[in-house]
Image 1 (cartoon, rainbow, N blue to C red):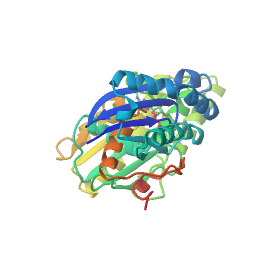
Image 2 (cartoon, rainbow, N blue to C red; image 1 turned 90 degrees about the vertical axis):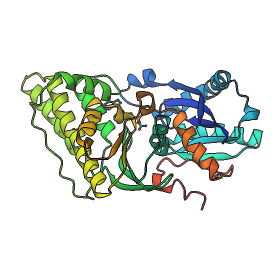
Image 3 (cartoon, helix red, strand yellow; image 1 turned 135 degrees about the vertical axis):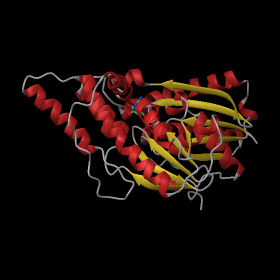
Length: 339
Ligand code: KG4
């Protein structure tokens, strides 16, 4: 194996990690959440600028923590997409510069492949596998027959589930990002509000979140117009039951139809306690193994990019220095980039 230095900058976390033969030597993350909080969402231009300011500091910290010098690194892995274009550019330029200066390979990594492979820090992936990818920008069911073999079998037809949590939180007056506050309020609430279970006309395992989001926003506005107060705990409970229930139902159906050996959760929303509970209880006794990522893996970091980097290093999946970012890169194109 090898020493890999990985860089992640696709959204609002600037991160650098170093792995040596599978062992994580450094995992430094500089989060910008406090800056974006006041806007109620990530401001792309500010995010790119902060990445540019932070990247060298985070890099130096990772080198100091690991005790490794740049000359010792065998390859530089970097998130090439999906994400915010300006943010991705900062990470890619940094990785390209290092690859050029030290004459080492450059490994392009898909951000969601990173979230999936973060699970390797806690256990072995068992194939065939279904990954429930739930984040602020993506909601996908990914089927994997083997390593690095990704097939999207279900997806959101509109908003990502995390985006829906954030918008609902905003209308309820909760802080950004809204996933955790909703999760916490839902624990204290009862399912008293009648919210629609979205009808999804697409593929069998597709989901849809924009109708649910609009229904909550309209209901809250109507109650306020009538001078009635909104019970935040009950609204959070009612919303979470529908939002999480939908993805759990589709994931279970896909897991059974595809006869998978393992279900893995990935992405920011995989921190949701109700999603974890539901997946655990519904998969119990089915013979399907469930992997719940540790909470540090659910937020963006470069350790997960390094894990994918290791697999791609073994395959000698190296890009030229003319590589560009792709804000809309699809996970099933991870291995076809260099064909
Ligand atoms: O993976 P991530 O950083 O997003 C992208 O890279 O796209 O995930 C962030 C998302 C946010 O929408 C946040 O509200 C949500 O994950 N999130 C949660 C929880 N913790 C974070 N959603 C539901 N329940 C949680 N406990």
